[in-house]
Image (cartoon, rainbow, N blue to C red; front, side, top):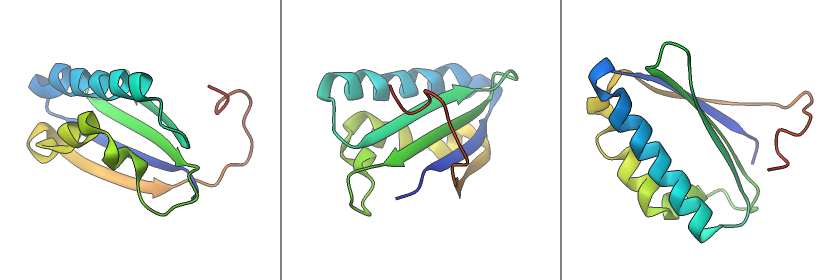
Amino acid sequence: MKPVMVRYRVKPEAAAANEELVRRVYAELHESAPAGIRYATFVLEDGVSFVHVAANETGSDRNPLMEVAAFRAFQDGIAERCDEPPAAVGLLEVGSYGFWNG
């Protein structure tokens, strides 16, 4: 499965809560260490726009992040936190250096 980028903008009053939910996802990922997931999240300089980049290397079309309880909790209420809803786009890598090597 090719990498995907998801971008959205949260309401200013929801930015800290959104970031905390994202941190919980990473805490669970570091604890459970699932194989085949490449995942990174960035907050843009405006403090309310977030970008997630993910690659599923499991060989399955299912989203392995859906097996992460903290990710499911992050998704709950995302519509209410957002000024601009999540928009996903597929990415075709032209090149990278050290980006996917953990």
